[in-house]
Length: 216
Image 1: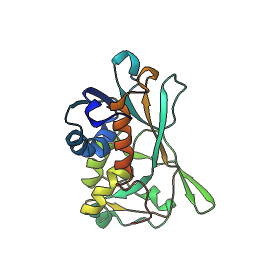
Image 2 (image 1 turned 30 degrees about the vertical axis):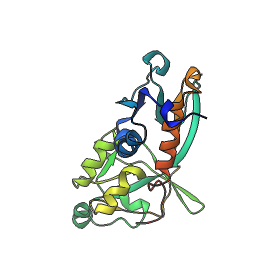
Image 3 (image 1 turned 135 degrees about the vertical axis):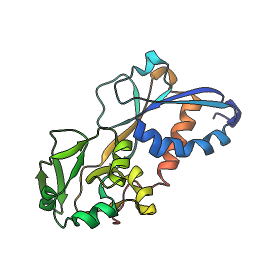
Image 4 (image 1 turned 120 degrees about the horizontal axis):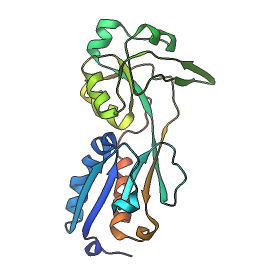
């Protein structure tokens, strides 16, 4: 078993901007304190990155994985929550059913798109016409907090805003498929103590944040 003193050198982490902002950055202070001989380089990229060629030690990816020679470790899944600001809901009203969304200003990640919900045993699909198309979830959160409309956010980004009161969850009985998360690393780094330490710390952090909830 590796000792704490064996965790040294540079640890290069790559992920998306929203995941870096919402989950990895908040856990890094404690991680760096626990491993004082480690240096962390955190880079963000929404496009494909050749992890082995770029010298990335570990990458955290959202969604279904393509076929790859990389080693993948499954992380706890993340829910998508439908949110809006109190100011928007005060101005435009609170949707009471999925069909009501057609009368609201919607913020989407891509267009055209479909929103598929589970309401108990019933599957519902709507075709939202978004007035703001914002692929990055971290930027989408800022737009929603500013009162632009209603949109989906990953629960790790939405949770702090719900607690702060800058966002409100709507239609919480409607469920979407959770987002799959994986930590990826090249086969030649499979026994790296620093990679294993980071993944274990990330999983521990995921256990402390609100990835799934039924609260409004």
